[in-house]
Length: 336
Ligand code: AMP
Ligand code: MG
Image (cartoon, rainbow, N blue to C red):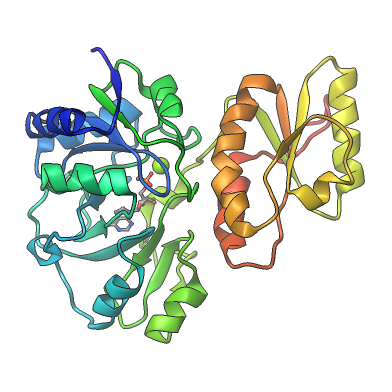
């Protein structure tokens, strides 16, 4: 299959609409990362998404709709606070898990009776969703377990030949995936951290919890149990109190003839010597740069030596969740 990359124009949007209607796949930008979209009501299109990514069949997909779409066609809203959340944070990087009405393909939710819905704010994405005017199932547009893409080039590098069209909307600003929030109970539960933080949700609903542990034997967010976000080079993680060790590891890799790069914020950077992938200073900047730097890093480095971030913002929770999943613990050559 030929994969075309195209800027978002009236012409490319019309082509995208036809492809989606014909159950083909189209990648598109959002304010978080690029998505790999297919018609959510089509078993065929949804199965193509799982195949193209090599995604485990028990990891459900998020359905994307435009801001004028009537969500109640797809889900039941059981708690009035959901409307407050919609008003406060959508369109934007928040995914809501609600009771499904069973309208979309059964493969979208992998057997769960809920459906995850998102209304992205990215202008080009809204144009795409409005032109299509159908619910679009879309995971991140990367091969399963690899780092999520934040440019059309990243999508092309991973999925060339596995989809028809990539809509190019430049670099994604948010940089990490949406906050996934289960709103089927009295208290909203964060299944995946992101740029819409617990504090922000509490400011609207008055309460919100992290669901990082399974309740009983029920896995609440199946996707979170898998390794994720790993670049193609080795990646090791050090805490901020281990900068001496991180520098030793760097020097050790160098002496072995390898090309190491530090990946750290601009403050920690001042205490380290060597090649660097700089993440910035504020939590928003760091989130925005994280995947971009991992994906740039894998092209030039044999090993990325990452240092944990700590800005004091609650966004750190989402960034650290990704960083810990992307990295392995450091072991000196020869150690078990
Ligand atoms: P990705 O598409 O790679 O951003 O992953 C989507 C995330 O949303 C995964 O962590 C899924 O487990 C989660 N998700 C999607 N649908 C549901 C659902 N119905 N219930 C709980 N989590 C969901
Ligand atoms: Mg993903």
